[in-house]
Length: 516
Image (cartoon, rainbow, N blue to C red):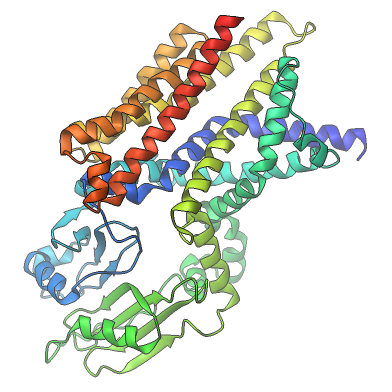
């Protein structure tokens, strides 16, 4: 590669990386915790759940309870267990029955506990795990701006990965083994950025591609929508299989009651080891009522083994099916693989822990890139005004990013002290607390201080997480494990390890400064 091409790639890598650095750090830091979304939610509620996404529900009992409150006649009803927690998602569309009462014409998005059958709204069931999960794609910013911002950040991150790879291509092996901590500061940050970046390269590439796919896919395919679908994106989504077949509403009552449990059992018996993950009822209580049962076979049997059975409720006739053991289409294969590799839900806790560590390593790559940008511009030829500006930029950057660690730990404590914590409380505590920490560190105006005391505050607060949980609930982590509350046990131990690592880093830095 000649010098001109090298310089172009080097500068585009630097500019693209610096431009997205703050947002990218927030995405990866929150995303690392999002791998344990379900465990955090169960920990907050002091409960545990079966670690799968299979529906463990008596559908007939659930529908009877829901019908007494919301009137289901003429509605589309959808059940799904999107996460490994006790909350089953229930989506009730507005009724198509013109004679139904007013309350049936309002759609509802509910969460129903599969053990108690108690229903809550999304806001009532909101927990810290959901907050961190949604923060990693900036969902707290009004839709669609947060999604698009996160999606384009992922796209620019992909661009930064590719240009960085090309820049280091010739020395990619030799640089991986080089680390010179006793050399000058620029060399230290260069070695750190290159070596750690190469360790996490496959992980970062996967999440850049899948993140962009999930969040801005409609913008990426917009030219195709305009050219081939006349601007109608629903036609595209229908061909991609995102929109299910709609069965018309007949406007006549169902002559005899039917059991949704029976249809779910029929689907389970149709294919060996088939687990039900979604159940949709179209036109509930109508003569043209249909029951759609979706699920999958174990990943050990087939990684993309998703299946579906569609039944006409009045006759029990199988209207359509998708055999999970049959050859998966290219389109379904791509969609399913992208979802599974992004969520890391196919290899248990081992994969989640590895992904969490790689996520934090990516945060370090971002930090080291910013510090490298700063020290590379600390030259005698650089005017003092520009040097001070660069330092202010980095101090603001570090105050925003590094303070995520202590405020996250403090929020874990807050939701335990205040058991009624839901959406409004979590939003207020996290964002106001984050802002106060940022302001305090900016007033101090010392990025070394910011680094050390974020580690210290986060480490102390992290060690207090299991202590506060034990005091408030009585479920000390060893007691939680003996009671079968594994998710509660896991989060407590998780914070002990994470806080210990943070405190170790703090004392190492403190000792080093004392020696100097």
